[in-house]
Every structure is written in structure tokens, then in C-alpha cells.
Image (cartoon, rainbow, N blue to C red; front, side, top):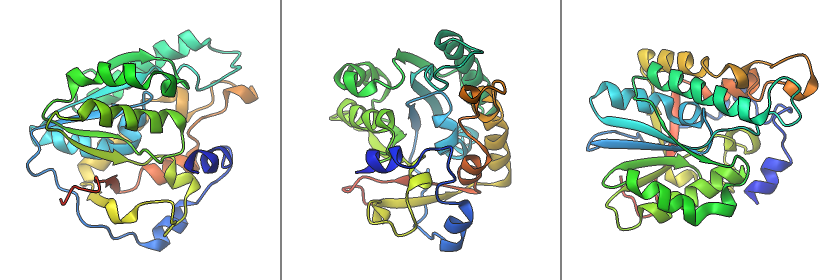
Length: 253
């Protein structure tokens, strides 16, 4: 269902505007980093770690919590048909952008696993095995299993498999849900939602980190295939002064 809704709401369209989300005045219980000693962020593509939970990440690092990102693919399929960059060139650029963005947040250089962009669901068990070495006894943030993008959902499933019997706490973060869903949407588990309000400093760092992803937020050229993947109406939803995570059903925190 969520994948169908994602596919039927292309990012070239406006989706649900931020003004509609703001009017809904979402008041979820607070998400706290208290008790977290190690935070691992699983990102399907370079930039998801910043767009979804960059504020939480920089806040954790500021508190002295060991925090780092594991990026599953290199995002080489972001501009199919681009006359400007080949997929391999895009992959290299996106690794550079991600390193800069993570440094801006105060994180160490991210780990890149090199899975194929757009095909994560064909390698979920392999991904789970690859993730296992990074997730022991951690709080693990991964894209929501109902986010709509197939790579996002596959990463969530693989992460849960990797975290089984590790003593880790798995939390999910939505990204594309804000585009295709509506406030009070019955396809979204709002009862699991927790809100993390960003300080002025963490919000500014997140915005600066997002600006590192020039291949995604600006057109590569005037060619239609080089259009920005993250136009202003998308960024407006993801640069709010708060972030939302979804706790597990059996997580009482």
C-alpha cells in the first residue's frame, strides 16, 4: 500500500504541503536521547541520514554519544538518463557530499556498504549480515518500513533482522511519508510517533549539512533528466524545527 502511494505521488508534484502539516500541529510524546550510549543511523542513500534525523544525530554527538552513519547504497540512480554524470560519477560525488555533511554534523566519516541503488530488496539477507557488525548494543535509526520507497522499506526489514538478539533498540524515521501521507492518515502508525525538537544550533547544522548535497538539491544542468531530486517543497518538510521517529510496538519509551 505505501509503495503504491509513493509511486503515485512523484516528487515532481507538490505532495502534502508543509503548510498542511503545520496546521495539523502534530503533538507527539517527546523522544529523548537519555540512556543512549551509541547511536547508529542506517541510511538507504547518501543524504537520508541527514534529511531524516540529522538534528538528532548532531544533538547526540554534541552530548558525547558515539554516533555514526552506515549508508547502504551510493545513490547512483538518482538521475537516470543524466547527460551530465554517469551513475559511477554520481556515486563518487554522493560519497563526497555525505562525508562533508556528516562532518558538518560533528560525526565521523560514514561507512558505505555499496549496495545497488534501487535494488536493496533483492539483497535483504545479505544486507542484514553486513549490518550486523555495526549494530550491537546500540540505538539504531533506520528509515520507516512503510515509507513507500522500496529501498527505504527493505533497509528497515534488513535492519530488524540484523538487530535481532543484539540488545539494540530499533527506531524508524519517515522521509517520503511526509510527501504522500496526510495528517491523521490511517496508513501511518501515529501512536508510535515521538517528536524531537531541535535546538537553534542543531537545526542550523542540519540545514548546513543538507546544503552539502548539491547533486540532489540543485539541478545538474538544464536538461529535464538533471532536475533536482529534492526541490524546495520537499526540503521544507524535512527542515522543520523538529524530527519524528517511530518507536517499536513493544517499546514503552
